[in-house]
Length: 516
Image (cartoon, rainbow, N blue to C red; front, side, top):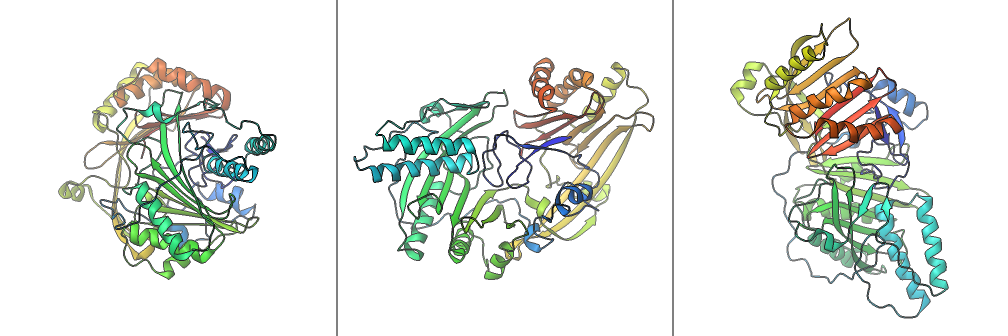
């Protein structure tokens, strides 16, 4: 199947134009053909998550290597976090409202001094950079136009209703009455106000001579593709050097104030390390984070990239030689064990799974009322109705208990229970894979492999039955437009991800999973 790949950090993009790894806005993603193998669960694969063949073709040949050359830092795990300690006794700060091209709050009246106007514009530009990424030529054009307008004394207000390829931009008043967190990020159990205050207190203590400007702005969008994806956030922005090179940005849900991510970009490596350690220990309440853990985290690969986990906090580090800065992004990840060190594992029998009476904790579950056995009956009926004969159903089990390790020598156990209903035949190219929890039989994933484009409508009828909602004709129409134009479709709807791809008329791939 085809997936979007970020051209800046070479990671898969799950959002249409936004990379959650390097936080860049991508106008044109690169396309890559991959096929997931859920049965192997990563065994016998190279460091790259897409397997040995992809690793050799797309990384080794280019000399980029893997994420961290097999070092411990590249494979740190995380665990489901139940509680999080919030910082205590932090000083209160009054955040100034900055004018962003993606929000509608009004900036206080500036003086006529053009140097101050230029500084204000740079704050605006920095805010845009966080959301849109530093690499886009269109942003550079907007920057130059803005500076030229300031020099001419013109109004530099940017349209607040601009549509960025399917994104409808939102203002604060558009989310009035909403009391739930947005759907675009996994949320930390930490307050944005608290984390921003912690960062300011840290700078006051460890970088008292730095020039510091504070601002706070709102940005939001909703997807106009029926997926229900919506983002609304407040960004607390701390500018260190009078420009946009060194800064700290804390993004938090505009309704709940739960943190989306923290971005730290500074030249002083020691200061960056100390701030990350302060975040993990004082804010997140993780004990015994050592300098040795920070050494592992900062083991960068050939592309100046580092990666690590500590509990539910995923940290991505990129060193940018041109600016001589370290750029760190900290995210929340509910299922980080896919990128961690496996210490040990053992197979669990079906009898043991039943006696333990605990669900799988490795992957999310469908929330549908249709469970695996019922879905299998629906699939058998669908095959008969649509004259797909000769596909024998098998039931496969792979149950294991695995112990992973992450930074700060934290360990946790993951129960990886998989019961697969499989339909296939040596005489036919197509197959169906229904993965469920071996204990509860709740569904993990649904895959259709090597069907044809003409089957999409019928397959969507089956998908909507198993999901327990939706109209098959509507699903087909929404997916076909992008599939026809780009050869794939990635769609979020009601907490699920639907991925469709195909290289030709006879190689259709559909993959349905819950969003994490």
